[in-house]
Length: 261
Ligand code: GRE
Ligand code: ZN
Image (cartoon, rainbow, N blue to C red; front, side, top):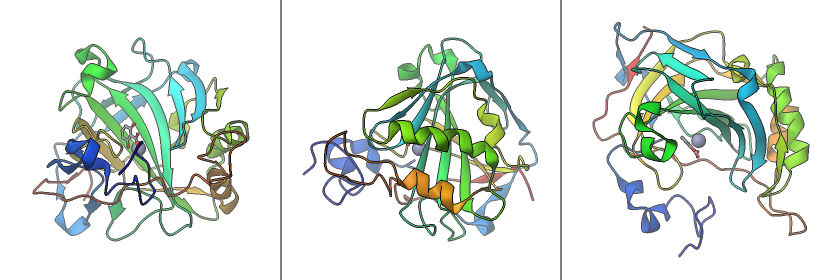
C-alpha cells in the first residue's frame, strides 16, 4: 500500500500500522483531552527548561515537517521537573500544522483543534543515546505548545518563520544558530501530562507528554509562511506541505493529569 509513510490517503495514518505495528498499540498519541476527565494532581511540580542558545545547529525540511536540530552530545539544554525524574536533553523541535486555521494540531482539547502544535523533543541520557531512549518507557519527554491565529502574535516565532524561505523544499537544510526555544513558551506554565507515543512512525511508546494549557499566538501571515513549505524536492512539481498531523488515538484507560485546577 505504501512505500514511505506520509499523510496522504495512500500512505497516511490509517496505513502506518501495516509497516509499523506499534501504531495500533495501547499507548498511542495524540489523544483528545477532555477537561472534565483529567485528574488534578497537586504533587505535580513545576517544570523548568534551561536551554543554551549555542546548542541550536540547523533547520531543515524533511518533506514531513520543519525541524530545528540541537547539539545533544552533553547536558547543555535540558528539561527538568514536572512529571520527570532527572534531566532530559533537548534534541529537536518541529511543528505539525493544517491547511486552514481550524485544524492542524495533533492533540485536541475539549473538541478544539488548534492551527498548529510545536513539539520540543528531549531524551533521557541515562539510556545512553537517543536510539536507546526510544526503547524505554521513560526515554523521551516532549513539551507540546499549541499555536492559534490571533491579533497578538508572538514575535519570537519570527526567527523560525523567516528561515523557512531558505528551506522551501524537501531535503533543504540551513544553519540555525544562537536560538533559545524557551522564548516560544506561553506565560503560564500550567500543563497536562500523560504517557504516550511518537505521533510519527514507528510510533514508539516512550513519551512523557507535557502539554501546555495556554496556546501562543501567531499571525495569519506567519501561518501562511508555514504552509508555504513544500513536500516536493527542488525542481519537482509543487506539493504544499500541509496537514502533517495524526488524528487522535484511543485513550484505552490512560489517565491525564493536570498541574492546575
Ligand atoms: C514527530 O516526529 O512528530 C515526533 C517526534 C518526537 C516526539 C513526538 C513527535 O519526532 O510527534
Ligand atoms: Zn511531533
